[in-house]
Image (cartoon, rainbow, N blue to C red; front, side, top):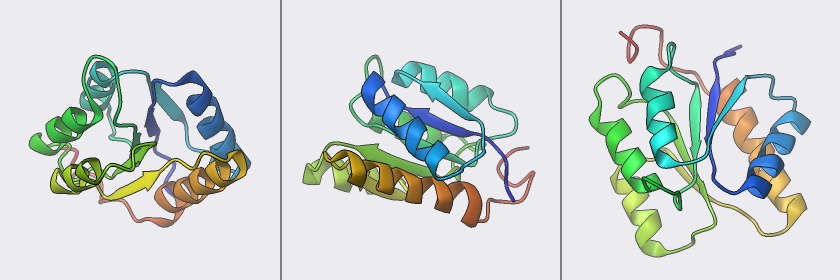
Amino acid sequence: MNMSKIILVEDNPDDERLTLRALRKAKVANEILVARNGEEALTMVFNANPLPSVILLDLKLPKISGLEVLRQIRANERTRLLPIVVLTSSSEDRDIIESYNLGANSYVRKPVEFSLFTEAVSQLGLYWALINESLPTGVNNP
């Protein structure tokens, strides 16, 4: 079982609380680090050792947008293969297309209804933290 950290990038305190609650409810035991803006997210990712198992990335962020965070992570040799799930309220076609063009592994729109939001985040946490096989140590973490 992979017990590496999860980085949640979320500027909305309510969505942060709901996401953390949903992950706990799904019994995801990984430590979850929270970045509340794009600048903080990049610092957290580039200083992580080892790299997290997944980043849950909102797009609409202060300081540096989620799309720019994604662009910079993919441009860095050490972090380019890191799993990134865009978790956002945006259903704009251009955001979906740009996210995938920049290398997002998944694009999940946050459901408005609490129970659907909780279920979506629970499933994400279980898949990316427990089921998905991460790259072997050293492959993207020299």
